[in-house]
Image: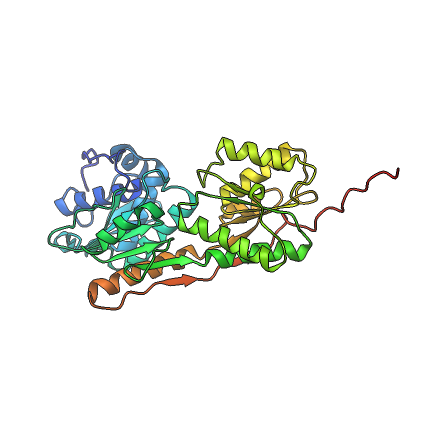
Amino acid sequence: MANQSVALRKVNGQDRTPKYLQAREILVAAIRSGHFAPGDRLPSTAQISSLVDVSLITAQKALEGLVEMGLLRREVGRGTYVREDFDPSNVQQPRLSIALVLPGHVNIDDYYHSTLIQALRREARDDLRHVEFSFNDRYDVPTRTGKEFGAICIHPPIESQADVERLARRAPVVVLGGTMPGDHVACVDCDNAGGAALAIRHLVGLGHRRVLVLSGPTNMTNSRDRVNGAQAELQAAGLKLTDRDLLVSRDSVVLDEGARARLAARLSAKDRPTAIFAGGFYLAMAAMQVARQAGLRLPQDVSVVGFDDPTSAALLDPPLTTVRQPLPKMAARAFQLLANALQDRDAPVHGEVLPAEFIVRGSTAAPPPPERTSPN
């Protein structure tokens, strides 16, 4: 039986590494050092939660990862044990170090980023004891001595592309959720332009002729590509995206006050748009809120299409018609490309664009009939 009062290191709240991963590494270190020997029962989930200073859910997630790795076993009604056939000396230090580089302002716990990060971890799970991830908000990442090192840069802004290229000259790099000019860096992304075209095609097919496009920051290639795809599809339908019907938010998660005010004014105009294509899930929710505040019904008065499909999209009122990105497949492919590049540094650099899927739900309908003017 292990010493149930053993002191464990607490997670670092300033570290951008997800807390469940930090907690898992703390437990691995305790097993490796002999604090928890083969056959020992670990403290309860609640005790571990307190010892390493994380929530119960986070502690549970850390323990589940160690069960999947084969370090622990669980007995219903009895507890969690270090496997008897487990040799602590076999817990190797990671051989492969992967830097996940994200813009400093992003929230790694939101739907988009958490889905990508979880998928990367799943992809590495078969060799989990030989892989470590670090989280960085700068592109001058120090290479790790004694280990294979590569980086996955998640949707770098356009102004950081030169930094990504400099990093790629030092180590294998894959861009995930974004694109780069030229063919020097492998990129894996969704077909953002194609997904936007699907959204516009759906709205035009319903009869909409006045479509507003609500975009995230245009210094992100995926936002830019969605605007371009929407604009091209409108043009193909003989329609024009006017300046007043292209609204750009400075943030893709929170609709900034300026964009919110412009959207409210546009929806209150006599020639208001009858449909909104929002280039993000959170932007779509904000558009629905602003439309309701303007006294408009969804979808009878205005239709809304989003981009991204978390579980909550189907639970909105009305359920959101949206473009679904294959986020897990994107992350898996990025990991595979990086692993291939580490095995063969001279392999040709190539990227992949994965198709988007269009999901029709209840937030879109035919436009309302035009208002009739009273006879003179």
